[in-house]
Length: 118
Image (cartoon, rainbow, N blue to C red; front, side):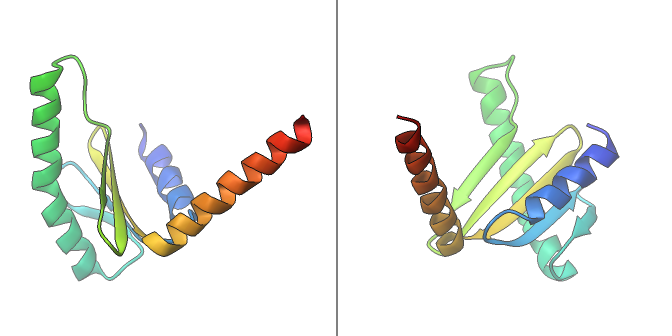
């Protein structure tokens, strides 16, 4: 994925419902881009790096021909989504309440569309 594609993906992810933070980190753990305070972004990046490395190792041990592309963590208040692609990692922080509301709304819209199609 080129740096232009990574930047475009970052811009698109920031627009998702409930996103309260997005962090783009390079392969060395250096912050490339963020929309939250730099110290908070660095804290997330530093804490996420060992988890991603452990998850990659686990996937490799289980299925050597496969590779990690995505990690999702959910707490009571937030959902952290970590996408790894080549040498970049994108960390997305979403508010659970807004995220759940958007998912319910999308599901309801799909049901209405299917009913109208019948």
